[in-house]
Length: 102
Image (cartoon, rainbow, N blue to C red; front, side, top):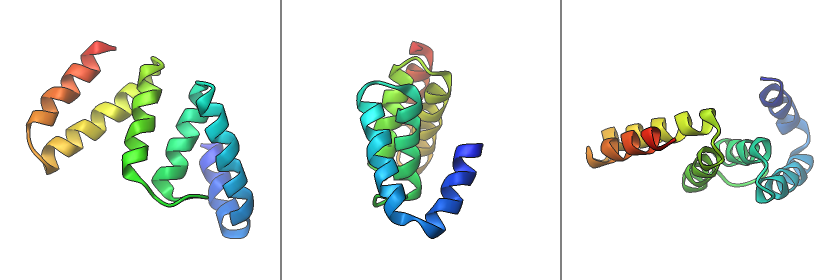
């Protein structure tokens, strides 16, 4: 993925630029742009330009899935399954329901 490789390079040299990139991606996500939504999730997941925040990662997965994006649906389902393994098995049922609803 070109975006991921670019971010890794920029992260080393241009932290301030990445903070600005995060702001622009966030504005894009607020306008319900799927690409912007995915990128905001990535920034939170990797802690690029912002502090890592798994709760926000999950929220942006959810937004991405609600846009009908197949990748978003898969990501949120995988997250729910991982949580069901680490927390309790009720979330596995929720993962299946979310996956089937799209």
